[in-house]
Image (cartoon, rainbow, N blue to C red; front, side, top):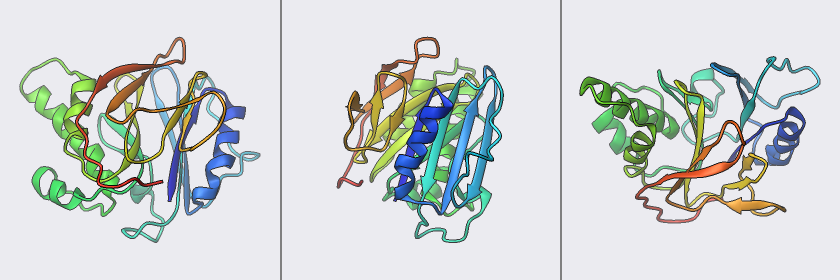
Length: 225
């Protein structure tokens, strides 16, 4: 099992980390978003926040905790969440059933065995395709084109590294968001709303509210928690 979560304040983020830690301590990560940059911290095991060095002027935090997967049971930086490309950063909870097929078709060069690596490379594929056609980059369209290809289950936090915009999407897997701008893999809690399947939510940087940014086609053969 894995869990994704995020929030505005360090204290809330740490609470979310502790609440989700039961879903896996094989690996942990924190991504701090400042105005124009991303600061990624990944490690094996759990995080001791008493010794953690937060980056000044961080406006938002994204986190992930991970249990060992069937694809990778020895911790390495490149096979742990979040997964990164030139333009995107993705954390994932769930299991894709067609990642091998997608890898062969869209990113045969990819050596990473973890299914999430296919997602971030698909996002980059559609980004570079738009650039090659000299079209204006439309992040929501790129996300939609990527998600409609995925089969299986997923709860995703997706970061557009060019704009520092954060998006959420899910199919099958559990994912909730709060009015205070947080999100996490949880089935209950006050002031929480489920992210609707097939809906892309975008975080408003100023208000820290989640707004609907678009919809996408999805295929979920079973529900995964």
